[in-house]
Length: 143
Image (cartoon, rainbow, N blue to C red):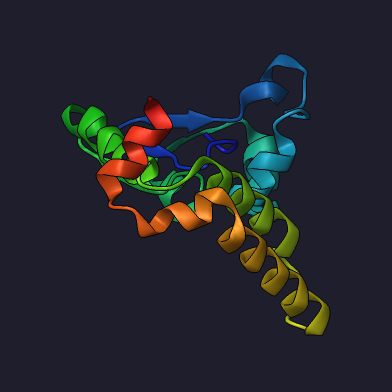
């Protein structure tokens, strides 16, 4: 869940970072979990291995949304539809932007870099394609 760009959980689901109960540590997933829920919550759940509810996962930022179990696929379809409205390069660059900008102060170097990035994408074939109707864009990506 922590490594997902969008995480949806069904109400009533439970989570656990139980590696310590097996004599292990959640090393490989730790950067993602800590980025999602913060170091303080990660310390608790890394150390205790206790189960926590979907509501707690939402409160901690591990998931973005809770839905009734019978609405999980509908919620996923809604997110997928929204994703399909964007361009693949724009998605990749947006993800890179979050990683590169998160935690940095707003200063001239950051402003210059973000300005450069949007200008480059606006001039790209994908960026210029936005002038086309949405149905043309999705058809050009799939066919």
